[in-house]
Length: 93
Image (cartoon, rainbow, N blue to C red; front, side):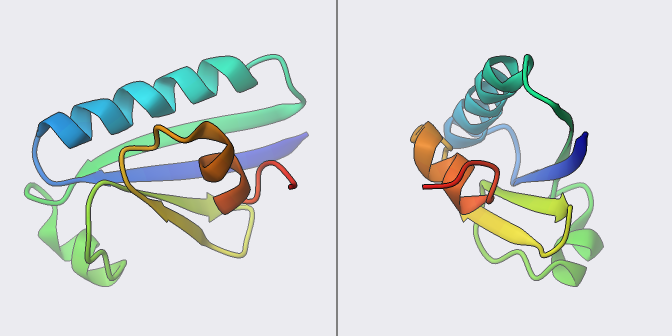
């Protein structure tokens, strides 16, 4: 079973951040029946600016796949599911 660790970086609870959280939750629900363990962390860079600096976060919302390596990033509200899955290398084209 493949283990995925995703971090969603937001800058406050903006409308774009809310959409990204909702879209990521929906994506996780759709992937629930597959042979993978997905964990998601939501990080508000206004509360944890040092983490954002360490991770070189320049735009939000952005989801970062930390595990398995290599790191992958997708910026935006995550509304285009196929683009998100391909960008995070969870789904092949």
